[in-house]
Picture 1 (cartoon, helix red, strand yellow):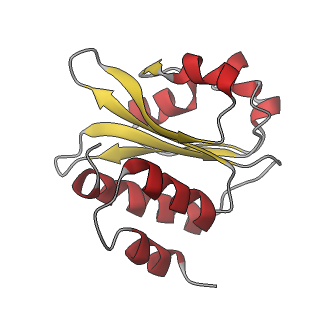
Picture 2: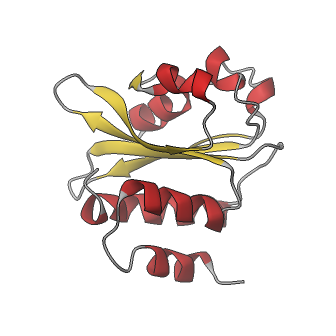
Length: 154
């Protein structure tokens, strides 16, 4: 198996669209659901840019996410990864009820930062079983997120 660093370099070797990149991220992390939101500077809200594996009944709920709300919104607000081992048993109030309807359990959201350290979006991935993402996996997704603004029109 390739290292996450090798996967990152391969993934971002050439410019691509957000859906293609998200599909490859999910494959590399063995996840079934994923989203890329970008921050709308005028509204201050996260807007859905790409998605995969998200049930249709949830899509309308995640089109726009306030910073500070839900997993993606918390990652944007904190400027740090947010992980839930089991979204279905989230007792901290980060996961919203509609997110729990997806049946995703292990979830990770990482902010996408520009060169000035400003949040420009969030990438999120999820598994259908309880899962603690390792420090290596979190670091790898952060490295991918660091390079997304230069690679995509995020």
